Image 1 (cartoon, rainbow, N blue to C red):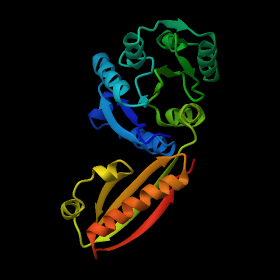
Image 2 (image 1 turned 90 degrees about the vertical axis):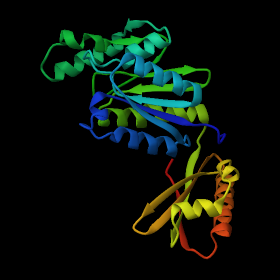
Image 3 (image 1 turned 180 degrees about the vertical axis):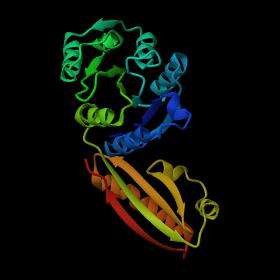
Length: 264
């Protein structure tokens, strides 16, 4: 897999922006996309606003290869994600007998008939792949354009997580291969972020081979080096190069390392 493949996360909901709900979906999606070999480069949270959702999707499609959008697929008037995607890509809403049967079955299990408010949950966007939601009434959306993949899933965490594991991850692996996520952490004592960056100097050479994250805590500084690759030896070589580069410039600062390979 090319190291130039990137992911983007868009979470939708006024409740997230107002702080009424913790944005756990972004954390889950960031971790799972990275484990699929698609490092997340951008993550945004937008309001329940048609124009804002469309602007975020347009920007993401221009710069990322895998975009996962969560939220805004429910039956209420503030659920605008499906409309935003449909209008942006000029796609019609069509009745799906399969989706309707699933929604009716869910209400039947609750001892209720399908309410008028939820009738729009039986519609899907023409020209897209319907992602089944076994835990709720909102179908997910998969849209591919010029090798880029946009996924829209409900904002309810159990529904989103199940759909990612069962449907989105297999699509990503078919499209981009069985890449894995490799990471190594250097833990340093006696040096701060500003001094470290001063000693490292120009980071362009490192950035072409690994992603770096700086994590200060309790008087220590962790530097995490990550690589996504189908070739474990290539990933190890890139991380080893980065570690040598850092050690050579940091000098005698006390440090040790932990290496991980995230599960497939």
